[in-house]
Length: 370
Image (tube, rainbow, N blue to C red; front, top):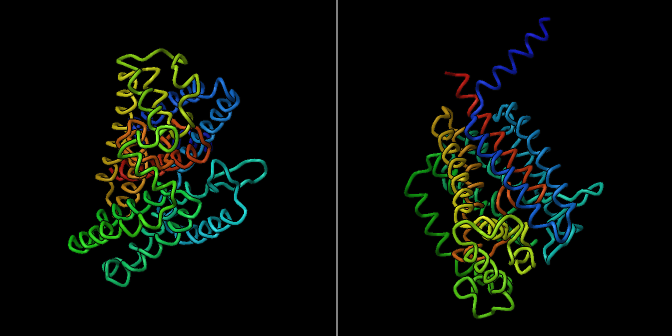
């Protein structure tokens, strides 16, 4: 009886301390994602929808698991997981699975996962751990250099896959951690200016097809049947949706396969073609709610580690949303960044749900202290 009472109390405590607004927005995105993946894959591979449902179920389990793991334990493991995944990223370059010209996946027992997705969480946690251990000495020039090297190593490995979007994303998250971690403003400004000044050098290091993507971002019509094709077809789909769309599974651009990789990179175009401006606005509203709840958790957390962790996680989700929707409507270059919880992909779903679970844990820590 005592055991049952303890379990009952634990369940009540868990539900009482959950951020239900965050959970509702997450669940709404998953349900929407299920419908979108079904529409985008029905004509080509209907089994993808079933696999996505399995990933959603696994993602929910992961969210509840990580919501019950003290995030400080994860921060403590940050440096160990960092080196483990650096080794895995090297392994990807040696024996990784290649698809669509990119070598980003590892196959294990018939399943494949994308280590760079997990590194989006692991790397920030390793940097946060570094800052917490050194406290006031965190932002000496020597330690700033060490943190930049910590980020540079996996970023370069990810660039080699190639995955420019993920590499740039983890650099952005680093600056967010520096800001939330109270780096002296002068040093932060200097780092930002240095990053801007290095952009021409970074551009020279890009592969030819990556430069083409940047060129067609400015004007897709310079190569309408090549590098600009994806963006043009996506813009046609978005524009043709009108106010309320053409109807579920009735989009001509998506159902007739004019939109390339429509179930991952260009899933937002599928949504807006079939549900119109109203559907697109609904998706934007869900991400806005999710982001605002994440920022609220950053503000509520009493500890610097919690603030930095929450800020890094919500930055990852929000940045992917902005980049993906931006490239779908032609205001961002195509980088291969998917739309969290809406695009097809197991690793992306699991990593996003782990991030949501950690955010829930940080929120629960605050609620327990109230």
